[in-house]
Image (spheres, rainbow, N blue to C red):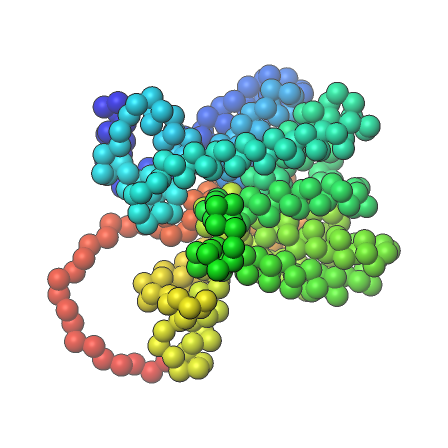
Length: 446
């Protein structure tokens, strides 16, 4: 336990980063083993690192075909990385050492709070227990449902298919076992499958605190402000995304144009849900209109909700930014929503996250475009970059074409998107409170 004390003496944000780096390194080593691949040679170090990062950060971008290139052992390694990455290695480690009788000190408790995005110490371990309980219950239920659904097609292998896709969807990872990088493109008329996957994505993306709030309080007026905002934002983003994708792709025969109107709406809704965090796609994204790709980039950048299995700047951050702008236009100093006031500190944090996220995506996109040598257009490169940052995993068919440097840039972008841009930046910067107060002076803006 002394080593545990030494570890927690590090800055909390650095402990979170290191925990993910440890998991990525372990996954890389396992995927490099000959037993992990069907060719008996193991993955190259850069491909193993990229896939391990993508699985640990529940992204879904991949340079290997999970079904055709990985053995059962390799697939189990992927499943382990997705599950632990979705919950967070800090979460699981905390529960294990607590159940062994260890009692956390103040510094250690602060580190755990940081990893869970919690402001108070009370009930952190209990929250972790609920997170794991909800995860096992939801994944277990849908694993059985999907196994029954897959049984006529895959026989006894349906059990494995059910478990893998249940975990992958709930953790918003987007990996599939259907082979040939097709995702759900050849199953876009399987409405039951899309409904199950979509519901798993939504449940995994709203966050464990929201699930706990809905289960325990049950009534809208009793929900916390956070829960209300998450529910409203998720509903609004899904509906707006569905209508925009449906409206743009309605006449596109290369995507959903040849389907019936109900099928088009189903695929548009599934894409709107999936492109926020998960990465499953039901039609060829490379054939989609540029407007559709732009809508998807925006949705991917916003991402999921706090304390969920998804990435992005988070839906609550985007909500606060929208309200802040509306308040400025109306000449109001305070943001009030659902009878509650949003603090100025939260407003500043939201704008900082949005700004840092934008800078990271633009910078990474420029670097990748330079490394690409302009072989692909800028829109495609930005799509790939935002997909990594939002831990979405939707690609337009260029992921496997990146060289070593390109894969490293994308891998780092996926890690930043999973742990959060704020956590990543705070792990690099030492905060010091200045006692010197300087006189204010106005400047012209706008």
